[in-house]
Image (tube, rainbow, N blue to C red; front, side, top):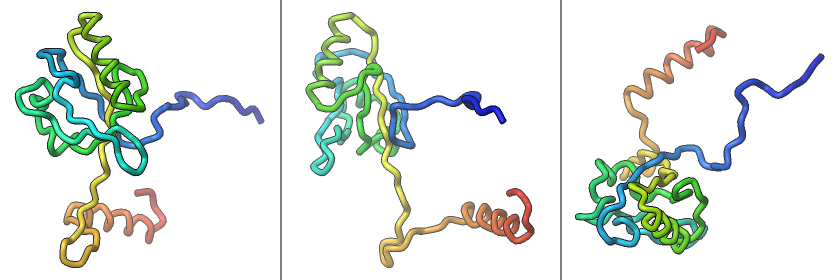
Length: 143
């Protein structure tokens, strides 16, 4: 029996599941390009609170529903652990005359909770998937 490295196996430095990359053009003179950042009180991670209007970040489409309250992981592929690191990465990109800055954000996991009973909601399309998987489990077939 020969054991080796599995094909296509790679390790990631990102310990989070859902992450997204956004690119913001360097325009104007706002130090964070319009990102309102704060430190999370429990784990000292950088949280994106909002995108300030009339700035490059304010022009990100649907930012309220997609990236609000996300955790900033990297700026230009450099790990950032404080707001000062983010500011210095953006300032360095300005000095290099880069056209844009890329951010890796970990989006929060949202669970739909029924407001009256505080129980997670299941939607109709999820019920169809659950019925399919339940049927596959009962018949001992692959879903």
